[in-house]
Length: 127
Image (cartoon, rainbow, N blue to C red; front, side, top):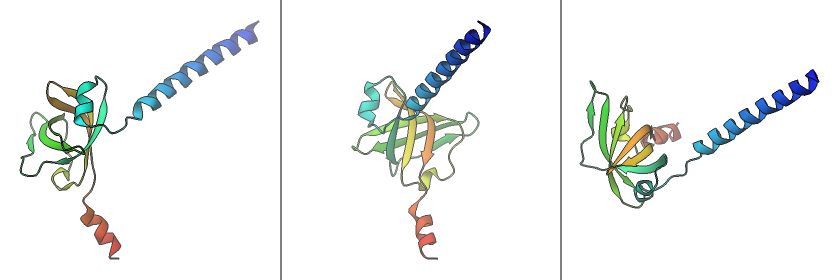
């Protein structure tokens, strides 16, 4: 009887961990969406875009707040806010991926992923 109870408890623990792993993995698979799609959903999404040239990137180091404008692949321009450390090469990046939610006309990013400029790739090709 004790062996059977151990097996049932062990199986239940495995099912709980497998379910947790499945849902965690599923939530990590956010496809890229446009700002229009981000505004329609209440879920966390990721948007691939480009910095708007001529618009300032404002960073308040004391508050740790970053504000900038991004244009998605459909050409929609949106204001982005981020609380945290400013990425090093943000001004020189080719692409920027923001992960977060669209709220009250502003995309509030929880993560910012910056693609390095192509000048570094060209330097490696010349070797």
